[in-house]
Amino acid sequence: VGEKGIPMAMDAANKLNVKLKIVGEKAGLQWENSEIEKRMSKNIEFLGRLDDDERNELYVTCKAFIVLEKDVDFGMTPVEAMAAGTSVVAYASGGYLETVIEGKTGTFFTEYNVTSLVDAMKRISKMKIKKEDCVAQAAKFSKENFVKKITELVYA
Image (cartoon, rainbow, N blue to C red; front, side, top):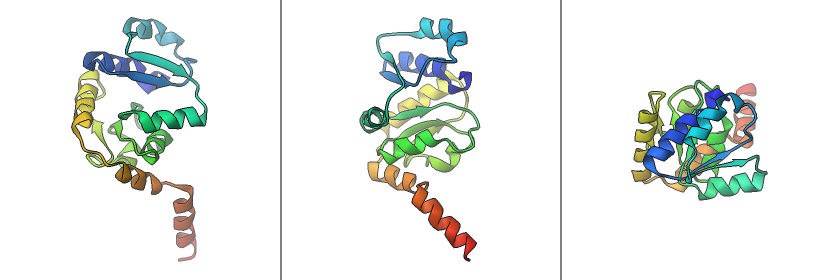
């Protein structure tokens, strides 16, 4: 859970005075509980576990989806956000470099610190990301596209 970067996201949201909604259970965060409590403010909300409809509603209505994990092999949540037409702010590592397109479906931060994240959040707020570009990028990772490409490979 420490790799999720929640305290860093909270610091960035507080510096920019923007709303931050954190989805998921706090399980595993106990060791960071004091750090999280220090950072709590009126613009930060822990939503807990959400069902698919509630989560999808957040994807559709949020200004951007932030993903902070390091060196993730793939990472499904940014693709889910883009499928809903939502831009992504991601740490520039791992699978995010394959799924997010800089300036078209989102932006990256390259140093794993609050300053770099804040800069990326400022950039995304000024970008003109098109929902249809996000949806098209997410479609590249759909089950149907995967089956099609594997079938083409096997029968080529």
